[in-house]
Every structure is written in structure tokens, then in C-alpha cells.
Amino acid sequence: QFRKTVCHVSTNGDTHFEDLSDVHEIEVSKGWTRFVKTGVPNGGYLSKGLYKYGILARFNGNQVALFTHKPAGSSNNLNSTALHDELDLLVQGDAFAKSFKNRALAANVKLPGDHFPKHACTPHLITVVDLKYNAEGAFVGTVTVPLPGSGLPIDDETIEQEAANRSLLFDTFLVVPLLQTKGLFSERKFSGNTDTGENSDYVGKVVDAFAHHVVEETNGHLMLADLQGVVGPDRSIILFDPQAHRQVVFFISSTHVADYMIALEAAQVNGTRGLKR
Image (tube, rainbow, N blue to C red):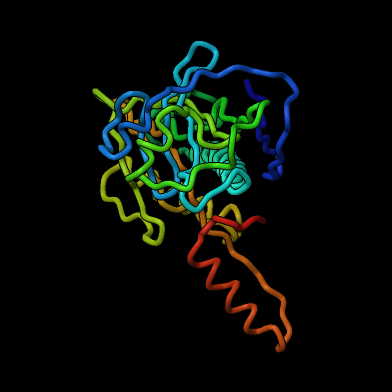
């Protein structure tokens, strides 16, 4: 059992969290840890990144993807903070995707995806990309009864033995829709964490333009990075696992130059981790 935290975005782009009081139930795969070392989705194990595990779960009768931080070097508090930050950026990214599509439609720019009917201001048929982040219905969940312990100090090599009987590693988790990646759907990476996109195909150029749009719309204060997603047979794009670099401005006196250099170095290394507006 758990309670939800959802994230909303206002018309001016500000985001805020809402803690809901209703208690829900989610079913989480048990024994998924046995397959972590293989790196192959199986037995409820979906994926692993630099900091997170992806786990198969079921909520309201639907299969979903559940994410939790790796235990090594993390804790309940760090896990919760990082997942809230990711939900915040996921919702922001989806709002930018909507403004990008509106901008394209207003400029009569043809992009792959959904068809829009004719309007007086757009006399010809416009095709606008179904570009979005995997944010619909996403939430952070916090269990109503805390799990024993405060996380497990283990890595991929020992997680199978130490956590074999646990489905959750921490009290907080992130839930997003489970994406189709087989058949006519393909998973694709469009840019890196420190490398801008230089795609040559049509869909890739759309994502490159979207990234540039975000920089323009935020006046250079935010740049989405490590853009990756699933491309459908109609060339629709669902982006996931958002990352971003933010412009951080420091006002310092000459006596605090050393502190500034330390903070700047940490910001460059961590990207969005630990940085908030």
C-alpha cells in the first residue's frame, strides 16, 4: 500500500508537487533481483541505468514500469529526492513538448505523426509530430508502512543474494507507463549528456529541433540532455528518462571564490543531480 505524489505544471511553466491522501495498492515483481547481473529483461527485471533499476509492476490492472535507485551509495532520503526531481523534470519536459508542437503548428511546419484538420489560419493539411515525454499518469509512490532497514548497501554483484526476497529496496518509487519496445517500435538515443544531437534523419532532426526549442523558450536557462525514447511505426516519439543541464548563477564576494569553484565543479559533474531552480 502507498500514497501518491503527483506533479503539476502551471501555464507559466512552474511546477509543484501535490501529496494525495488516498491509499492505493501496487503489485511489484518479486525475485527480479536474480536477473540484474544478466542485464536481460526477465522475471520482472526491466533495466538498469547508472543510478536506477527498472522493475515490472501492476497498478489498477495495468502493467507499469517502476523505478528505484540502486542501493549502493543511496538511502531512503536520497532515493526519494532523486525520484521527485525526475518526476518534476518529466512533467516539465512534457510541457515543453506540447509548446514545441504548438509552435510547429502555428508556423505551418510539417512534422511526422498525428494529422490535424484544416483551419482558416492553416489552409492546407498539417502533420504534427506526436512528440511527448512518458509522463501521462506518472507519480511518485511512498509506502504507508516503512520497509525494514534504510536500503541495502549492495551492488549488482551481491544484490541477488542480499535482496532476493524483496520487491522494493526503498520506501519511495517512481511509476511511469510501460512502453512498447518490440516489433515495429524501436528504442533510440538522440543525444548524449554532454553531446548535442547531430541527427541526419527526419525523426532525429525533429528531436534536435525540440532540444533547441527548449533552450530558446527558457532563455538559455535549461537544456534537455541525453534525449532518448521509443519511436513508433508512425514515427511518433515518446521520450523517457529525462536529464537536463541548468544555468546556475552565483553572486559571490572575492572572499568566497574557492567556495564558488567547488560548487561549479559539482554542478558540472552532477548535471541535474542535486540542482534545483
